[in-house]
Image 1 (spheres, rainbow over the protein chains, first blue to last red):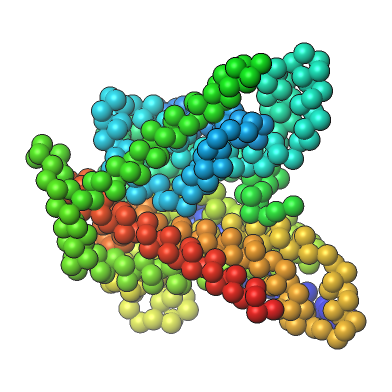
Image 2 (cartoon, each protein chain N blue to C red):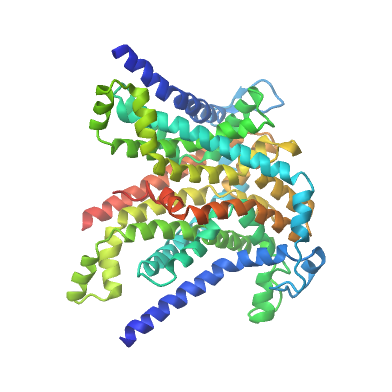
Length: 276
Length: 292
């Protein structure tokens, strides 16, 4: 009994110790964002600001086109997520409910591209986007983010569709329905939890993407949050309070989504990784 | 009927295939072709140089530095994330009070973007940053503040720490889901047979979640070899290219020096290295499967 108690104590100790290490950088960012510019130069640093102020947040939010960047990020992430959800579910439906020549090959190619690092394709992608006039356009981001996220989402949904019994199809066809009815009225609604999980993940991918946006967007008004923030840091080298206020505004939506859809979020990550 | 079936199939798969084909398959082939040409934005005439770009990449001293760096980065950060992630998953699987709250804490870095995470680390590892303050003034472990980001190995250590910090939660969540699938009866049976916690962990748990361990290993390795944003923002490859990684070097060559041929060859070399490592990891696990 005592040994069990001691064991539990050790487990808690490890959890708390590692938890503190994990949270410290985070907490320090929050505390720094609440300090006014001058106190950031202080050494020793203060863990808790003596005179906390939300001044940095006000300055970030009201100045420097920040609201434009925020809106750009939302536009890009939402559109990319919706396009991926639609195209992937259709593709997955085709792969799951039809038999055609080259089907296995197509699926294998889609899967294989999942291990290819997105950034190694950046040069021809840049060339392509430049040629079709999407440089400095949010669409240049949206289309490429969709192309990146389609393989995994298709993989996830195909697995889900495969698990829906064929009798369902026959029932629809007997009732006079077509493939479109089956897809739109039955399969898509049934797959919503899986699609939701994948979509949260895809949204996050688009929301935080950095290298591609850095390459395609040079016009200040078209920036998304990650490049805006990186730029901010270069511009206000010493005003870390301002930078961190911007960072926190940028990750707040993600944290809210995470906390409210925690289980969906986690299942988006673990499905595909854990079979059956 | 058959005709309808064909047209509906095309309706479903064409849009996705077109987007995927144009923005993934075509670039994949184009990168390969580019890697054999001297191809710049300024000179319109592309010159076929055969393996010239590859030879240039391999004889580039910064490239060799970047390969050493990325292997060092992966060799520390991948096991770091896996071991700590597995330890945490194991603890959280013990039905501990407050487990859910801890799960949220450990997961926060995962949902924090690379840009934000990199800036935090750049700040706390600054000369007068939090880390130096804790080590020097608080714990008295060092006499003078360490110039973390201005020296190759310490800068790489910071990048590794960031990689571990950011990835533990992801590994933990996957391991936790895997552990929850292990039937509890197995542990009870092992206990009756006289296995202690340690023994049953290594004899029962590890073999049962081997597939998941492989998955996490493969995904984290791919991620590690693709490290970019943190290096770009924290050290920029400096000082004197000492912390350059393959992708930061590729990016610099492509978009600063406009040397697309060199950058494409580098991309392919990296993709091949990653594929070989992935295949090797699969083979290794298959072999250890046969031994049992």
